[in-house]
Length: 326
Image (cartoon, rainbow, N blue to C red; front, side):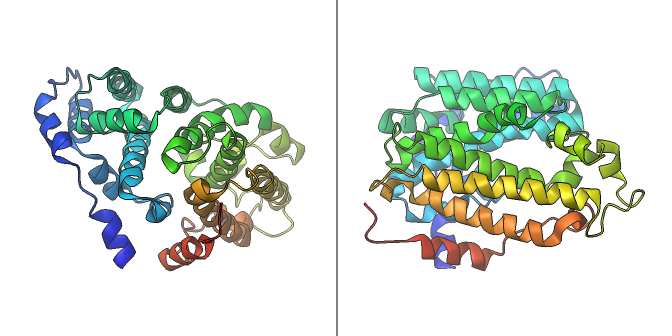
């Protein structure tokens, strides 16, 4: 409980709070857009992070307060941008596009020194302190925009473009805040981002297909005689049992996900792992999540959402600590 309480008591500093008064009225045509954008624009990074909850947050524990604030700003930006996907589902793409456009503009303002929101101000401070590059966050916005008009991915290579934008780019953006060498650690961040995102994809197959999205490589699904419609009604073709075509397909994709984690491990900069502790914690938590998804197997299409227990996340984080890391 001590670690969790310390994490959640991070507060926006006085400068961030003063920035609230400078928020310009949001010209929203739709009531839903106005409501969501005003709430997000008035929140501090800590408030946004606290409201979301995530496997990522436990990895903040080993950071200094200054780095933690910087990472909170980055994480909160990722959360509010990703909210555009939920808005597209509940309130339509026009609302989602306006939300995304607002935060793209706020990102530009943050890095040019003219933010309008507490989050933008926090990004500005983090950018100055850690020398952040806005390009990876711009890539994230491109990835979220892909989600607003989802299309099937023909193969894993085409899926990797999306995963790079929504996951690997975020990891690359985090490297200066972690204190890692951005050049030496970039291959590791790229590979780990793909591993984490594909783990999420395999866990969330049912949820995604119900909302009209599928992030599985179509060529491999077709090789097993599967369609997206089959996944919506798995009992129709008896896909939930061991030995089914879907079970065989999943076995192949679980192996692919494992290979991504091994590729990330192989890319760890030799003798320069200390700054990558938060990323390594995330890797361990998400590989534990993959373990659980694999145990559920084809019933992932009907079982409740798989999660790693909080106690296990904390244990994985603590067991990653090595005082001899260089």
